Image (tube, rainbow, N blue to C red):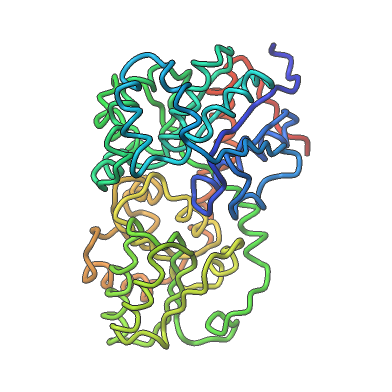
Length: 407
């Protein structure tokens, strides 16, 4: 079928949380729907802040998944090591996405989409298992958005089985996508996959949308048009990966030398720890943690500097979005993604991870440099969402004539 007729494409996720992976799913699903395709967003539970970023043209399918143990009979029908590993997965620390297995099988049997994409390791495994059990000919594309080795080393019970499961099941996928070269290399190394089994498709950003939304007004006393005090911004979930304690300690050093403010947008389990550290460092008057912002772009457009302090990433969309908003950036040179986004430091400073001194120096040097908003925006356009959609269409529907959306 190559005549450009609408095709049926599904995206499967446990939910639509507030992270970069979910934001990317929302953009891809909406972009494919804008091209006239029939797109389903299949969710274990239809919740999460990124749902509001999904186009009304995308049909949201609620699997009403609540109990992982209901998937046990299905798991035991699968070949290979899953029978041995199932008890471990279903005990302490089990991934809740396993509750989606039985209803996802029912969805595939009922709807029979031509292709389905799933992001993040266990989501992808459940998609492959559901396809195997249902026997439908749906093409399954699995997408890795973060470094597998970091998940495994994190010590969570459910992640210890991931390399073995991925090594066994990802070769059965019709395509394996990694969001950066670093994620691809780490995936192949950690799961002992054959080199070349995964392809890199960098995340895309709708730069025009970022610039448009960045012009919207915000009410924040530190980001007024005529302010004199520089404002540093960071955006991301409040969790260990993002290394906000490193950023706060770097900011504390910087504040001893100059007047400056810090805003951290995001929500997460580390909020209380971070608030306690802010007080311990005596930063209460100069640090604000206002929570999750569905539109962070006005903050990016008005901040003097955007900082990513993460210890690891997959491919940080937020760096591209900050560049698209015309903001200067500093990032840790973490595995992986920032080096690829910033072209080894040509478009923003890279500093070592977990080093408050180096981060403070990089922030100060960037604040003292002349900003170049147009150069930042020009780099962001290298990661066009249209180009990314083209690449995903080629993976999902290799025979598809990839027409542009109507103008």
